[in-house]
Length: 155
Image 1 (cartoon, helix red, strand yellow):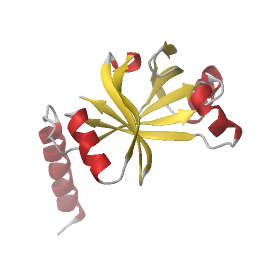
Image 2 (cartoon, rainbow, N blue to C red):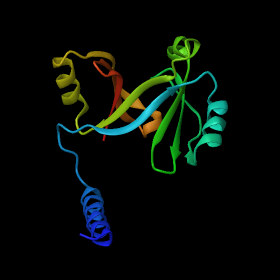
Image 3 (cartoon, rainbow, N blue to C red):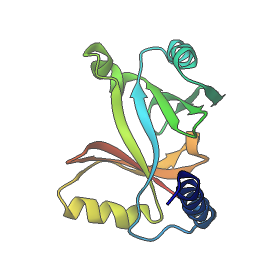
C-alpha cells in the first residue's frame, strides 16, 4: 500500500473517531480525563510561567472556593489540556517540598456510584462530594487511590 493510501486510511479513522466522540453520553463506569491539578504558592506567577512555555488559549479568573478552602484557576492549553492551579493551606507542604503535581481529575456520570466503586477497590474518600465554584457548582470529591490523589467531577 502506498504512503498516500495509508495516510487516507489513518485520516478516515481519525475523523470517524472524532465524529463518534462528539456529543457522546458518558457510560456509568466511564472515567474521562478532565484536568491535572498543580500546587503553587503564587497563581499569577505560575500563569506567567505556563504562558512562557506553552501556548495558553484561556485563563479563568482566580476564584476562592470556600468549600475547598483554596484559590483556584483553570488554564487551557492550545491542545485542549486543562491545568488547574491551586494555592492555599492544603498544598503548602507540597509546594515547600517542590512536589507540584497535586491531583488528576476525572469526569464521571454518577459521582456517588463511582466513589462506592473506588472505595470498594481500596480507595479512601478524602473529601465528600461538594459543589465547586470553578466548575459551575458541579459536585467534586477527592479520593486517595493506588494512582495517588484523584478528583472526581460529576458531568
